[in-house]
Image (cartoon, rainbow, N blue to C red; front, side):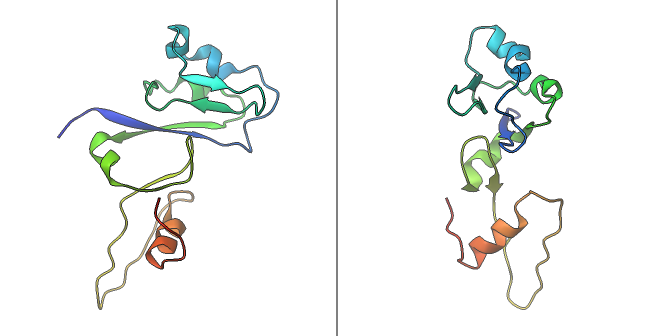
Amino acid sequence: MSDKLTRIALVNPDRCPKKCRQECKKSCPVVRMGKLCIEVDPSSKIAFISEELCIGCGICPKKCPFEAINIINLPTNLESQVTHRYSANSFKLHRLPTPRPGQVLGLVGTNGIGKSTALKILSARQREG
């Protein structure tokens, strides 16, 4: 089992404003080394963070005055068990709960971790992918 971490870079488009000083991009050590870890498209003005280039330092979430960025480190062994992902820099669901005959399955957790999405996939109201 590898100890290397993979990352999920979440950018909340509702909080990422059209006009900002791009503090996230300016403070990123990977961008300062000349790599395009954080890109801001001129047409959308919403930051795109490369999860492959991101080192998980946590500077960009701290520097963003709008709290639009969240970097989550995950074990690499979960990477092969991705069940659902909406788009780049957004929600990613790893594994599904397994209901057993004759038993009750409860899903408990904070908002935004995929409880409803998992239930929709299990009930075939939403496709995996």
